[in-house]
Length: 61
Image (cartoon, rainbow, N blue to C red; front, side, top):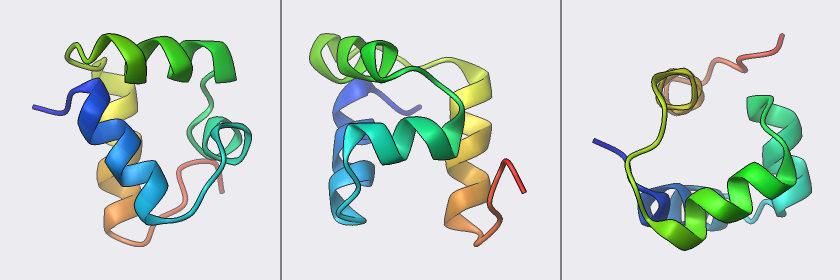
C-alpha cells in the first residue's frame, strides 16, 4: 500500500516537481501536497498510475 510518504519518495527519486508529477498522474498539485503531507494511503487511481510509471508506461499517453 502506498502512502503519502511513498508518493513523495517516488516523485523525488525521479527529480520531478509537484507540478510535473501532477501533470503526469492527472492529480492537482494541491491534492499531491495534501497527500504527501498527511501520509495516508493514496487512492487506487493514483496507485495504478504509479504502477504504470514503474513499468515504463506513461498513464496519459
